[in-house]
Length: 446
Image 1: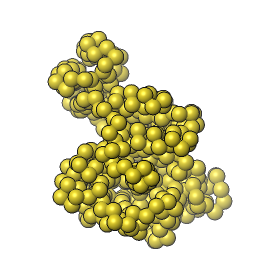
Image 2 (image 1 turned 30 degrees about the horizontal axis):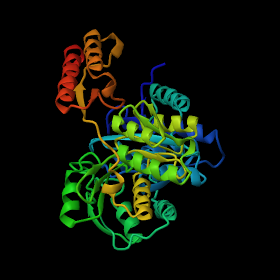
Image 3 (image 1 turned 180 degrees about the horizontal axis):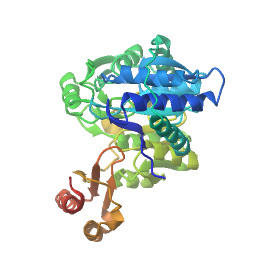
């Protein structure tokens, strides 16, 4: 049965509108509370949020729903998504909920749920909770908020964990940190300064409405300018909930998740820690990464887009490293989800141990020109039923042979079709991407 509420990354939408209206969010809390109460006596659920202005009232409704089943909410306040995952699996919490819409604008928000393992809830559990939410809404459940005081020790425990994974000091290192005016706004500067770095912070003055606004992992231009102006060793940008990280090198080079996977895979293989000599990535990862890994004796497996699917494949393969070009990188020795702060520490650790800066570390990645065109659609029709679109795709694939790739998919969180074309010639890549995008517009365009 098709799911109505849960997408590829929890429940997401415009705060205050279905499915993030007060009644549905309260029903989510009640459904999760019923599930949690059935798993343990005296059950507790940890809640966290990013800096969106809608976060506090959403947290109150989740807590109110939990309370209907005698489940206590512990509120970590402003914290990252991986911070909630860490707390859920290391403390006596039955579940954790992160209130965030990640890289989306402030009007949006979302609910991501983790079980005690620290993994996002599997599809089967999400389906059970969704059915209970829909039943409660049909029965007319009345929203009732509960205010939970912030437990200041929870985010401190997460920072202490991150520090414990880092065997070096950063004394004298000049770095720029772009916190996207989001969940990392106080955590990231605190972490790196406690390790000795000289930190220049940008995007660290959230006002409830400026999260991801021309800053953070999706907008690294300001970070690049500041790295060059300060002559910093590197810069790192997080997204709104800090589960991803993008880097800028001393020279101004943008270092994305693909480059981080190559850097980390090489270091882990040299240490004998890259289990199965395998890296898991997605269909969006550049051909250049696949070829660079292959030349190093490392196989790369591709999954659909979404760190959830990367993690599922990592577990099947018993792989320790996986991630996405967008900056979600999972180091399974340390975490159950992508973690931007942890990724930054691993990159810094590799740099310190090797004596190479980020430019040198990323030099082995030859990036093939890649263009993604987003097409707003009225509805999402199965791609195999779009004859004109498939004709264009086949024509492009025939023109490139094995020297290029085409990927067309629908966004899991927005009414968009995404057209990605990759190949050796930027002009041909652009031409082919727009031809396919035009075919989609003619059939499904909004």
